[in-house]
Length: 95
Image (cartoon, rainbow, N blue to C red):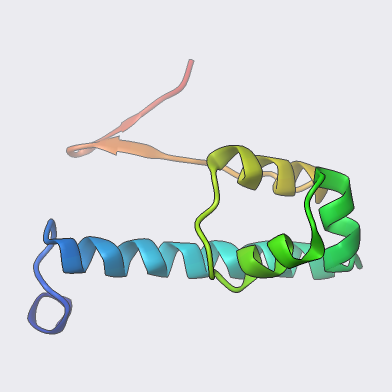
């Protein structure tokens, strides 16, 4: 269905769709972890040195974030985040 309506894998349309989907999921994870920690957006922003509006944008996927910012957010929330890198059919293991 995705191939038909969005585009085949590797096309700009499909890449954009997949990126936006991942950012939306990431935003939901940030919000869930923040609520679990009983923190406001303002409190989380202060911990990592950004304004409340930046946290809101992250949670609502209205902007892209750097890996550094994402790592700071999850560290401030005392939450663990894992990244997997896959090259062809093999996951890259960090040593």
